[in-house]
Length: 334
Image (cartoon, rainbow, N blue to C red; front, side, top):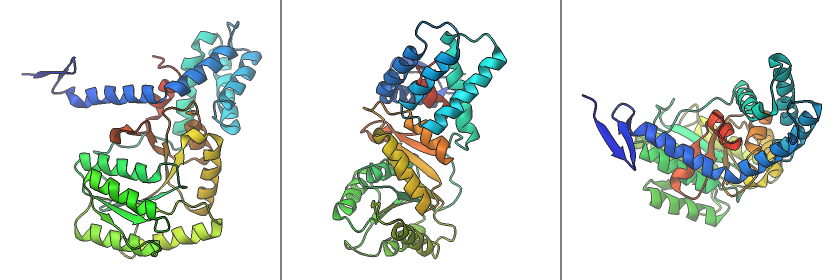
């Protein structure tokens, strides 16, 4: 016999489970976090189609301007416009009232084609043990906070987590990571300020391996110094880690501040030139109208967005879902 439960006014059964309800909660968080971006984008699209019943060249020109000024980026905008043109030509009688739905379809497909498939949730089985994530990014983008939130989410999913404080050049970085470690209840491996970051990473992996950890998150220096120095430093950290875990790091995650818009593009350029970035976390999307930057960066650099930051709470770092993101940005077209 199926058991039913009342959860916050919602009736769910044991098969729908609380997982489906939690998905609705995550969707509400996503909608709320992208509210300013959505209002800005919809306002610009509304202006683009004002007084028009069909998607003609004027509408497309206006749409192009709307997307570029929404921080989607020029190259990605031109790809989207081209896809919309093809779709209008193919489907013939598409009116302006269908433009949002068409954009949701085409932008979601574009992201999928660019290797930005949805990533597994925190509960999913990891491909290695310990699974090592090296986190890079400039100071101020929310790098250490992202590490703390990731640690919380992985621990909540039943995984044993270790943190490595390899940003040894800034005393506040080590201190901040230790505060997160205490808050979440996970160990932080650290050394004196100014120590060799690679040595910290080595110690972290040794401790994690000895204690059967599932996930290791390594914080690195957030300096956009000379590209060669940055490249050498990150390469050294990787090489030293591989003495303990041969295929580490399994993920090099670049953290970008979404509220900086086009500046985030430039940071992505510099870091991808300095090291092999394999995933992105884009933070501070709540309270900004620049959410379109997620689409542009993921398309231009062909690197999957794994996580997006939508608020201050530890649960406000979400696994990126391309379709739901685009739907929230464009007004949840059904």
